[in-house]
Length: 156
Image (cartoon, rainbow, N blue to C red; front, side, top):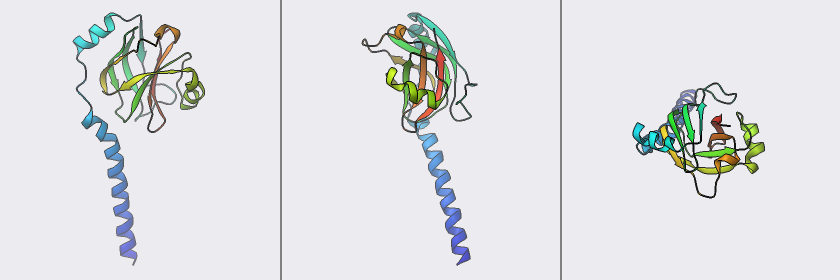
């Protein structure tokens, strides 16, 4: 009986580790090709603002981070850099700088969701015509599925 319980426990641990690895790896495996430097440069050309994603934000950690240059323009927001891979990332604009999940939850009613982030090395997210980035001051990457803060940068 003891041997069966040990085998059951070890198999459960392996299944949980595999499930966690799958959640982490699946977005990487299914991500479309990242935009290249030419595409990022073209998107950044019309940018009104430049800022940086940094790894040292309060709620950033080994699994939730971003780094690189972010260009914010009226038609596109582009990252030349990297963000930690994960599922269901969304790009938001906020009227105040945010670096924690609690601050995100508090300010979410005043934010606007720009669109989905589908790549983890470089990205370009089209800005809908109904959104004016000049009305905000911070760009945020947020994981909708798990309610996780990924990264943010204040651009004005």
